[in-house]
Length: 308
Length: 312
Image (cartoon, rainbow over all chains, first blue to last red; front, side, top):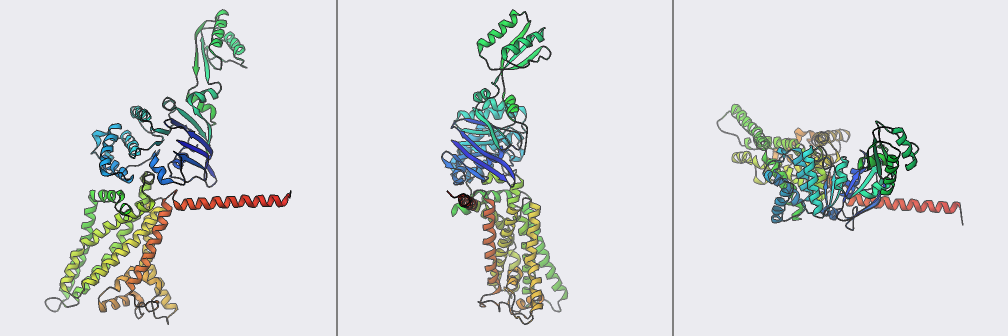
């Protein structure tokens, strides 16, 4: 669905996107993660044909973005991180305006507006002024706007920013529904746990570069073995530390308050052997389990926190 | 072409503009000012009259006063309506959403301008009853009134195109409005100053400099009936000069020269606004293509230098 090759965007001396290459398969949800100023918004704007790249090329459904913007705008539904609405229009008029801007016939517009309002749960606000909607409702309306021309690719820049927990859950459910409808979605967000739950693929950007990308499992696998060993003892933490150092080949295995979380890359048999040795040594083990790095851990590992 | 003009931007602009209380208020204020001028003039004439009724010059006098005031109002109102059409969208953070639809930059710019001009036309048309009063007094031809309305239309289109251009260039509406008013002021007063200056430095030159024809007031004066036209030019500071004498086709009237100048300005500013608005439009692609070609040329030159430095 989407292919990016050596894409760069420079604003004077500042390089916002640096030689970015990426491939997103049809029907997947690709989460673009990165600190502020990492180049996520610039990348998304280039893909939405709102910004010309300095170098490199991108293709959406086989169409090159910078040579055929009109076709790209038909294929892409874009929701920016900060957006405004026409407060003096009613919800129905607002959607009708955008549907007409995509040259849709009047009869088709009426039908699709009803469907979209139902999808984003705003049917009861059809004749209300946009001005009277809450922030969450406006976000959902903007999502409906980006769907008005039935695009195959949705580019959502921080769609859940500024929303309260309930609205965030509603937005997540909505995106899941869009996924089930077969839409390809590129989404950027700072709320990493939500992204890991929602996305099939993740890409982490920093200083304009794509640091790592792949499926959730691939990323977890690539980052320091991905898994952890979480252990808590009642007593004799020092002895437990020595055994773990030996078994895991670590320089040190520090315990804090009789608990430790250590990187682990073995299998179930390794786990069984470590636990058996500890019990055989008489160490009072209170809990022993395998954990995995979450997206937040991975993000902290692969990014240096640098912004441009 | 149909889609270019009758498009959703125009529809939305009309809907939004006519929905609020501001529109009827502005029309009322506009007509109120024109009514005050007409009645004020009528009252002054009545006070100073030696005989009952009106002299034959009263009709044209009210007409001249009204048309000049209306031109000033049009010049004042047009920047206010047009200088924020694009920068306002940018400030409201709706411009990106508009550009990423299938509407072309040409369509957005033209319809924004048309929507603003349509409202100004509404103001002008609503002032027609005052002109019918003038027509009642006599002394003014219907064709002359028609010419005046054409001058209004061209003036509002010109200042409107400048306003739309400024709102595309400047990110903030306030800056755009100020710059548009400065340019409008140049058209109204700056051209007079330059004309007066040129008249002083070259007293043997009998005609008007071309720049004077850009002034809508010159165009307006040339549409006035007979003696009023020359009287107005006298008061304009260019008395004694033969209007149109220095131009190659002197059979054209000043308002016709003004229209030619306005036409060029409108087309130029609108094309510039369209180019600036479209981030990845044809112009950007041409620029990119040129940059790529230049890069390839630089690489070829580098290769040639290297091969000359290290032959074989």
